[in-house]
Amino acid sequence: MSQSNRISWLVISVTLLALTGILVQTALAEPAIRIDPNEVDAVDAAKTRDPVISNPSPYEPITKCKQCHIELTDQWISSGHATAYRNRVFRYYFSQYKDYVRYNWNRSTEIIDEQGRKRRVPKIPRFRGRDAASVVIKGQILEENQYDIKVKNPKEYAGIPCLKCHAPGAFYTGDEEPFKLENSKDGVFCDFCHTIIDYTDDLGFELFPGMIKQGPRRTPVTGPHAIEFSYLFQKSVFCKPCHDDLYNNNGIKILDTYTEWYNSLWREAGTTCQDCHMAGYEGRSTKNGELRFDVADHSFYGVRDPEFLQTAADLDMESVIEGDNVNLTVTVTNSGVGHYLPSAWPLRQLVLIIRVKNADDETLWSDKRVYSRIYVDENNKITYNIWEPVAILDDTRLEPGEERVEEFTFPVPENPATSVITAQLFFRQLPEGDVVDIQDQPRPIRIKGLSTFVQE
Image (cartoon, rainbow, N blue to C red; front, side, top):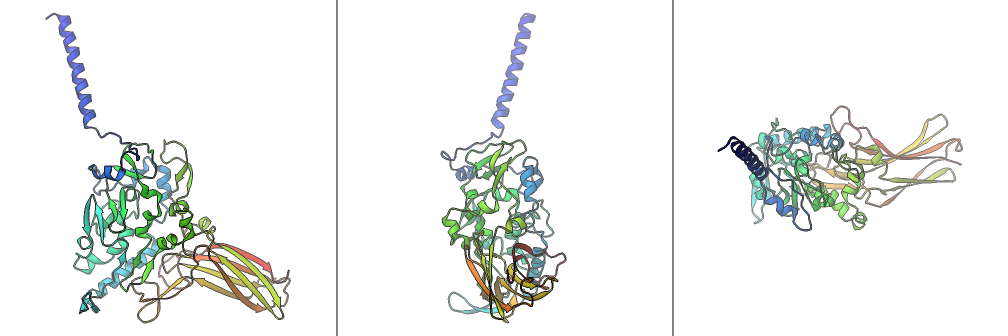
């Protein structure tokens, strides 16, 4: 073989080897997936794929999400979801609850079972609801006793029900305090929500952690991970497992925000939880992504956001002098909230404060109304510990769209033309007084305020 032929065969061989390597590498590589939801069901597609786990936890760390989703993770990091485990109020009640469990672990109480027989059971607080019966992880149904009731001592049991929503990364991986996995303290984090592939009332969430992320767009653009459309991200039912149907051991309803919304005109009008708490804005969901007008805000606006709360309610005030008295009518309207105001925990209160002041800013008269759900324990004392209530004493909260008319009467001031009536509406995360023993308690947030002279 001539020198020129040997060189030609060498070039051909090298080329063939290179092409073979490219073909092999292409065959082994994970292709970017772009699924048309009209042709392929995203949930079924996710079930057929093996997740790629590159973290000690099956969930990706927040730091990895932030490499591309900078703006969204910056929004999330100060949200109620991010601080669900770390916030001061939760930590206080979490500690109180665990102490209560440990104290009552060896105590028992008498119950009548389904067969009508009397028997004694451990006097430990348990919670029903929140799809507590089971959960589906990677296609396997885990009954509650496989990840909850199985614990045999108070150190293991204490706090487990709380972690299901306040630290799901720890709950579903079995991580125990002090947490060892990266996501366990991150509250409700990116990868937990974006790897939920289905939900049913019977089985709760179906979890599928891995490299296929779920989202609300029907034409997603894939990147370092695959993206699939999920109807859940456009529906309020996605919020239900952690924002509804929570009962304590005494059968007392503690949390029913989703049900409040479901029975409201807001649902009938097609307004979802996401429409208010994740309102769309013009921006980019990734650092190099296309500009969109409907990027979902991941701040999860709620009770800690003054500007958001100021849209929740309206005030109206009228006063009439009759003889020696002033008759004052104040109307409070739940005009901007698709559930009760306030909703959720018994700690939360809406407070209306009325004051009459003279020209020297001295208070001549005052009164207030407090709107909340009030619970009592077995001793008929008001309690804010959600495991203690045996009854709801009163519920004065405002239903969606409700106009509550409050009437007040006070003496005509000495100088009515220079005396001022003020009506202010506040939202309190914690009741007034020493209910919670924590420093730097959240301050009341002013929602609305009105003022008028006693005599115009």
